[in-house]
Image (tube, rainbow, N blue to C red; front, side, top):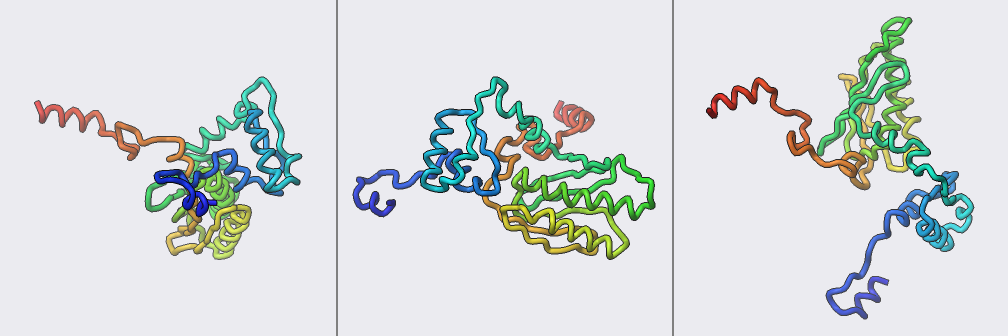
Length: 234
């Protein structure tokens, strides 16, 4: 089609335009593993059904038009989930937490014990948190659509068996990921290294822009530093 347009159309002309967001979801995401695709717009609903006529007619029954009075994102608590997915700190079920830092070069995920002390010995406590962290890391990476180099700073464990079980947990947790993930193992410093295929911008740069005051660093000069600079200038 592009070649035919090129041969028949006068220059300058647009030869190709990528599909819109709804159509890309149908093309890239909607498959037999999806139970329901809920849409709150009648025109978009009709568009999806028309697309599926050619792409996958068997999936048309899974597309539903939402007519409720409560906004769709509010009904399914998506706004709150998006807010959580933009935060640096993510709590784990036991009281530990992750700190997720994204940069251009790589993403680091730091695992902390937090409020969890546990009733067992320290090694078992650390093992439990690391296992939770492996599952939550895979979930957060998918939710935020993080790509490139990812380094997880797990809590040090002495037992080799615990380290192997944790790596196995990472492998299992990432099995359902559509993007290709390469798990590179555990370093001597207790860092889990992996790469994930980068397809597009992750969630944070897609929905946010750098702070005009700190330039995206997350730091501004302290009041003391600012006061001293002001005095120097005076």
